[in-house]
Image (cartoon, rainbow, N blue to C red; front, side, top):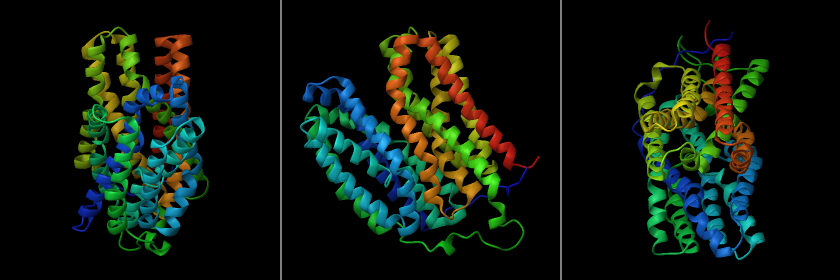
Length: 409
């Protein structure tokens, strides 16, 4: 087994705080406007067009599929031209796509706007933001990534109620226009003035120096690199299916297990704070562990949480423990997605690597809600839950195998 250097704490430099705060604001707005708002607005969109809900969700799924296809190209653009240009351009395109979505009047214009919207999201959401931090800090970006995801964790907490409140005053088209203005008014200037410009490849080279410093020989190469990439892609894709399915069907599943609607909503509301709590603990104490160790330990919480739900779903206490375990696991998975590739593959070509890793997961996430809905309808709650246990368990196993490969015996 190859070994990797032990993690060393990387305290934030004075210049890091404006960058992290700027990216935190744009991630909250980005995820809120491009992703979370849809869950609130979808019923109104369906009613406005007068078609079946499948058309509304189908457009969103088509957009996620497009995102999976363009993610590698977005990563290569970031490596070639820097995050300042790519994320600024992406924010402007996202604003235009939101305006186009607000003006959609039929299935063709609706699907086209959704596809463009989710495709350009790959230029502005977490993978791009992680690349910005890596371009700014090189191999020492782990702590900054944790800090960023801590802020980004509030996207759903803010935008679900904000969108609900706005929906009392405006229709869905006006809300998307408001969110388009936020892209131009806040995200474009923050990306344009605070993000690093084009980074020369030499700036990404690991430092050579005294013992204890990370050098290029500490990163994976050849067969070990390919094996690690496949294990990571498998784990991220399986987790992506589970999270995407649960983001749409969690409340339905909880009620299907016998919980009342009010209790189900309360249990679901525990997931968001649990994500933030997990990220806060990782930010404060996570430097004591290798990122790959954090990856498999946090991934293991997800199938354990589903098992609690399966054996005691009608018990609010066990369902609450499920929400906590699931939320912590999901929250840490966002950090892992940025820190593990950095640890294993290094900062050189980081944007393209994240794009390649996320591509299959985005495609699977696009299909997960519809596929899981069919499974619940045809097979029922228990077989559907067993599938989630199997997928999340396989993801944890893949990450554990990866940790064994790259850690000292």
